[in-house]
Image 1 (cartoon, protein in one colour):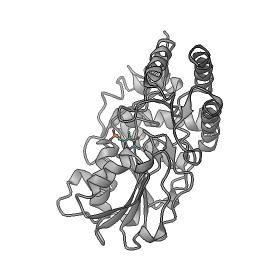
Image 2: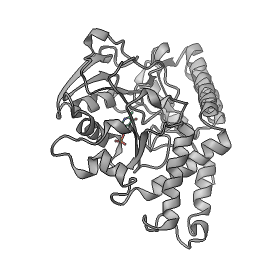
Image 3: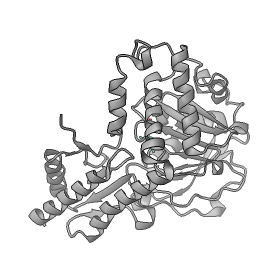
Image 4: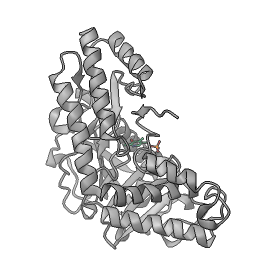
Length: 361
Ligand SMILES: *Cc1c(COP(=O)(O)O)cnc(C)c1O
C-alpha cells in the first residue's frame, strides 16, 4: 500500500491511526456485530458514540456549559442561511466582514433575510489579508457580527479577533476548527463543515450560546431551528452517524496521540513555519498572503508564471504530493496542511520544492 501526501483543501487527509481504527472496527463495532454505518441511530451503542463525540469536543475545545453543541448536516453553506434565520431576530440587522469567497457567500445569503452590511472588505487587495475594521462602520444594534476566521481559498487567518462589544461574534471556523485553542466564550456562535479538519464530509458542527437561540425568523424550516436540534440532542432526525463516529475518533487522536489543542497548535505552527520560511527565501516561489494574516492551515503561493505553476503541480503530483493546485478562482498553488498532515509531509514537500527551484529557477 502506498499513500500520498494529500494537500487537498477539503475533503482532506485524516490521521492514519484514525483510518486504521475505523477499518479495524468496520465489520464489528465493539461486539455489536455491525458496522457503525449500519446501526440504528436510536440504539444504545450509537447513543454512546454521539454522546461521546459531544463530550470529547466539549473537553478538547473547552466549551463552556452555557453553549449548545449541535451535530447537523448541510455543510457550512447551510449555516450561511441558518445563522441569520436563528440570530437575526431582534433588530433584523447583521454586520459582515468580507475576507474571502466564503464570507462573501455568507454575506450574500444573509442579505436575503434582513438588513445586512459589509463593514469591511479586502477584496480590492484580492483578499490577501484580513481587512482592517473601522469601528464607525459597525452597528451597535446589529444582532450579530460575522467573520470567516480562516480563509481557505486565500490562506489568511484572523490572528486577533475583532472587539465587537455586546454584539455577538459569529465565526465560520470550517478550515481552522481544532487547529489551535480558541476561547469559545468570546463568540456567540461558531460553525464548521467537518470535512477540512474533523471528519469525512456530511457533518456540520454548530456551537452556540444558549441565550441566543429560541426565536427564529418566520418561515424557518424546522430542520434549521437550532433550539429544536438542541432539545433533541441533534437527533430530531437521522444525524450523519458515520461522520460523527469519525469525529469522535479524530478527537480521541487529538486528545491521546497529540496531547490536546495546545500541542496541536505547536505542531501546526511548526509545519506552517517550515513552508513559509522556505517561501520567504525562495527565488522562484512567492507566498500570497500578507505576513500578518498568514494561515497555518492553507498556504497559498505562486511562481508568477502560470505555465511554471502548472508544471510544478503536475510534477509534484507525480512525486506523491497531490492536490497542490490553487482554488479554481485564484490559480497558483495551495498547500492545505490540516491537522492530519505530518511534519514529515512538509519537510519532504519543501525538499521537493527546493529541487524544482534548482531545475527551473
Ligand atoms: C469549505 C468551506 C465552506 C463550505 O463548506 P461546505 O461544507 O462545503 O458547505 C465554508 N466556509 C469555509 C471557511 C470553508 O473552508
